[in-house]
Image (cartoon, rainbow, N blue to C red; front, side):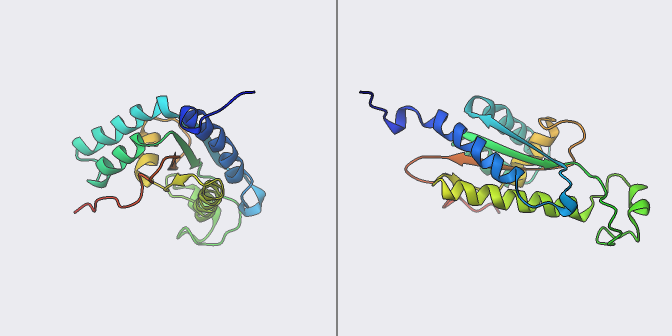
Length: 181
């Protein structure tokens, strides 16, 4: 008979859970059924590089003060789920991006298609819900995504990235956070 103590295997367990959470993001509904998302799981060994990038961005004056707080929160995590989107028009000519047609919007490739961002938000919500279902602490963080984008962790063609740090501990590192002025 084997005995497994939760606190001895927590990093492995959270990474395994993160892979299931990634599936929730992948299967989230997407406009026209077109999947422009890139999803990755980072284990605890990869988190310091992301946190250091967040700190450097702040030190260089390219990021708000909350990047420092969020970097510390990230370091208290056991895994990180990254979800990013490529910018690709869907041919709906809806005008939500501010342009009359998708062809006109395509002349400005840095301007996001509203549906790409909707899909990213829905996927993040599905991921956070799945994390809660698994009783993991999590928090959607733009700051982590900005650092991951700068590091090109999801590739060159991913335009917007959000991060979902994950933790399994006695207290959530993402709750009762100090306010940033």
